[in-house]
Image (cartoon, rainbow, N blue to C red; front, side, top):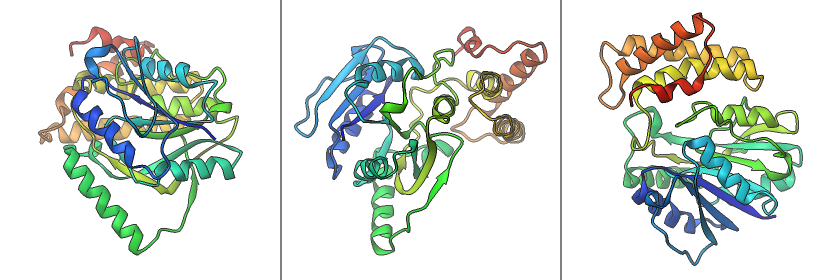
Length: 295
């Protein structure tokens, strides 16, 4: 079974380089790693003795870049794993991915757990993330976790694996520009009829949640409402899931705008929420409108 890792990156050259080095510690090395970036200024070209490494350029935005990586991988890979450039997988991550797809031919999408997710807070430095991962690995070595499989609405883009044979014409939706809010759920939704979308609790890592390279608060706030509605209309995201997500974000941005976290632009997100609500009320459902908003 050939396993290819795709990493989309933007403006985080040093972090990407550390992530590529970190992948050399996998007990089951990837058969290929493809880095997708807008152009060469976002990467430091290098070679690794551990696995074949290649770069593709030309796409801009998470969906476009992941599609570039897919085009380079399809036809050669059996399993494609998407890692963010700020995700640190446990040492047995890829070995477990290979075993899971080998033993479960009906699985289409497999997601792991972020045992610590810096995206939900201020973010973690590489050193903090590494310490958190080592702590989790030690804890699980002392008290092993019983494997549990759970059906999921979608993958989690920072660590998401796909059976390549099930992909067909499915692609990440480039109508979701820049950060591509909910692009992982949309892509998984395209494959749900071909196989199960599952999570595996023994598959884990740490998501640093690096803040560099992300979109502005206003743009993200707009996407938090418009993207779910767009995807419900498209048919790839369940309405119940989408509307729970929307109201949770509206509530968080409204309440926390009075006492915003220093690392989140809550007032910008709330402004984007309000603008999106006005557009939706007028029947305007256009995720690409964020490109007209100030960064």
